[in-house]
Image 1: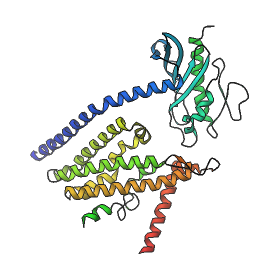
Image 2 (image 1 turned 60 degrees about the horizontal axis):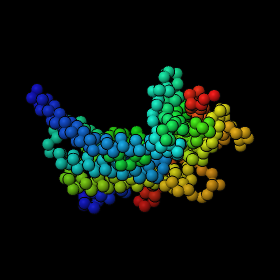
Image 3 (image 1 turned 90 degrees about the vertical axis):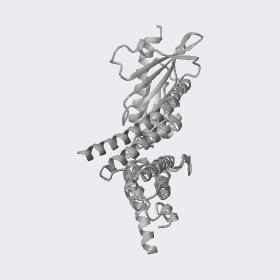
Image 4 (image 1 turned 60 degrees about the vertical axis):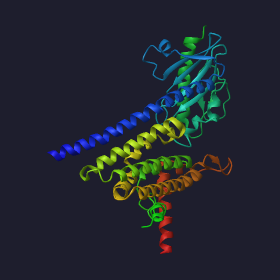
Length: 192
Length: 197
């Protein structure tokens, strides 16, 4: 009985010291992690909508229903106090889980400014190429007024986008995210 | 055993990956690129070094009957510290190693060294043992990941080799490629060893 108590207390002390050490390191690293994530977010906003002066998260205003599951965030870009662009975060389902993508729109031009794949778990060498600039650039400047279509040969008309070779599912997933954002953008930000 | 030998045994005669074949799961999973191999090896070495030091310092106070839970608590703490530091200072590496950082906790090499070496030897010898094992494991990871990255992606440490026309064997960076590469390397090493005998 005494032995069990002794062993228990010893383990308690070991775990307690370990816990203290962990919480101390956490207090040191947590602020760095948070500010880094914030900075990453701002930098990636700049990439999809370079002209933004300030970007405000207005998800609660524009995403009322739970039906819009693909769109997870709506950020509005302002310049001189006026909304000029919209940056969506979309999470369409790819071949192996969500493909988190940022999609930027320009309100005046009704065009896609750029897209950026933030994170994906697609097959290395195939679907993972979706986060390379060569694929993301194919969406640049597409009109927001008609749906973006993924095709397997060289695009002929304006809103067709060439798929990644051997990764059609991933390409279509990215396009479906872009299209979901596009529909929401037309419905909410373009005055007809 | 001399001190120099404590260090070198982890690299050659007792290499954790090639000779003891320990820690297979993370080794197969993360060796898709040389950068990953180096990152994993460095994280592993840091954890092994810290846990070997702590365990060899505490080896006389830890009661024998609860030594394994104590080792696990110590190792898990160092892994979590490594994970938090990496998240703060090397976020790109943290992202690409993903789930395999917390899995260092259950990497049998670390518990194996704690049980087989650090709990029976002094601090200095344990440091040498950890460094040797760490370097040996890192080298092994780099060798496997070099084979896989060069054949599978046509790059080395992210630098393209051979030009755009070269077709890479994609299977080498997919999971089966891990087994193929490791199996061939082990076979080659066995062959070399048999020759020298």
